[in-house]
Amino acid sequence: MQTTRFGAMNSRFASGLMLLLLPLAACRKNNTPDPLPPRAQIMKDFPRIPAATLLDTAGTPEAERWTHIVVLPFDSSKKFFRDTLPRLGWTIGAGNENQARETLDMYAQKGRQNVWIQLHGQLWEFGIRRTMYTVIAAEGGSHDSSSAPVRPIQVPNRPAAGARP
Image 1 (cartoon, one colour):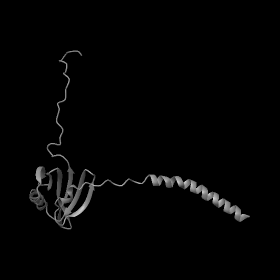
Image 2 (image 1 turned 135 degrees about the horizontal axis):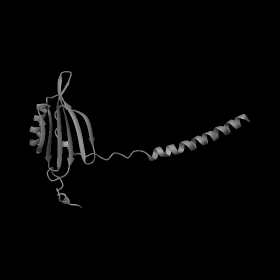
Image 3 (image 1 turned 180 degrees about the horizontal axis):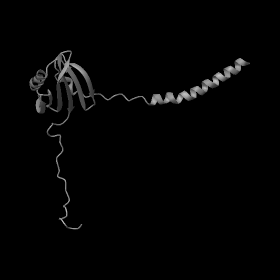
Image 4 (image 1 turned 60 degrees about the vertical axis):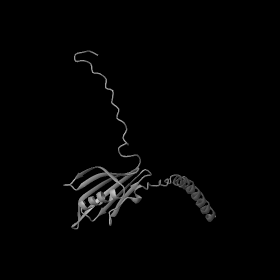
């Protein structure tokens, strides 16, 4: 008779445990993350410095970002992009360079593809000089036409000095 009582307690315990775990299992099934949307493929043909190591990449359906590091001085990395991009049909636009800090930000465009390139030199490790560069790419209108027209803000007239409102 003890075996029957123990068996009945076990089945009640198991039933109660199942009732507690069932909602958790249901929640887990409903909370599975949605698959990530496909990334943009803007940079699939963008030139990379030979022997550069990919450090990081991120993207959305509209844009991509790739970060590389290369065993190459800053000036040589800069020369690679300034020489290679025009040969491949890219137009180099505005940029900002700080030679003392070995940083360069430059924009380039090819058709509807827009890229922003950031170079950072002065990276030393074990006596080896390296340059890190990040390329951010987006597809869309031209760089110049993407800004909205500027409309003047209507400012109310000030009351004359000494006048009461």
